[in-house]
Image (tube, rainbow, N blue to C red; front, side, top):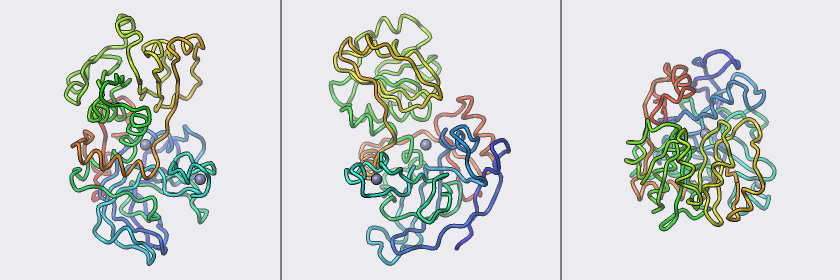
Length: 346
Ligand SMILES: [Zn+2]
Ligand SMILES: [Zn+2]
């Protein structure tokens, strides 16, 4: 088993530290990837701090991974050494349930295997992308088109697909009015992708601090949700609302912004249940939905779409010794818009 360099959490409360971890030997269907860049996702922080339940330490997180193929197993047909590839939020699934067979591995009825803090098929705990190398089954490896700048490709593997999937599923496109709630890592991607799909995009953010960015990324309008008149002006207006905020908010107030058959989709995950008034849903036959990342085929579709349309996340490159500071800055929304770790510094 090869030993590789990484940055790991050793407890829920200590800062992350340099570490070494073992990767499995390359099996017949495996791909060994030399990781170049790894994005920092809010989920990484929740996970290492035990906020989504207890985990086993040491734990390496990171599920926005890009790098190059170094070695492939004897049965690997789709990749070869030197290929530019990515790994997102999952590294395996049962492949047999109806959702897997439909290409929706993220909804595997037997539970997909998360890229980190999951139980791998050999019983070990999966370790994520804040490391120099990873071994992944070829079916869960994505091809990263050359047209996407290398470090910018990393956040597409979680933030990109998390927003692309609901936008595609609910048919964002020409003639559709799409609102994006929140202008963080997910929100700025939702704006860029929805605009590239041809939708009319509006940002709903607490303040107007990022208005110039939102408009530059393709939004037509930008409103402050602290301003009560926003909710009057935009009543019965949107076909689709993508809510990227993971803090509690007044769901009814946002649902009332949906026109006939409009849908509000949460991709942010507030820790507590949110109340919804049925009469708000009755009006305009509105829907309130959730969406989780995307399947492997759809993730590839998203990467190809972004390459073709020139869509890329805004990133801030950091070295490994800045990870803990970056976590604090993510917690205080002080990042425009996604930190990416240069794994050469591990
Ligand atoms: Zn993520
Ligand atoms: Zn399955």
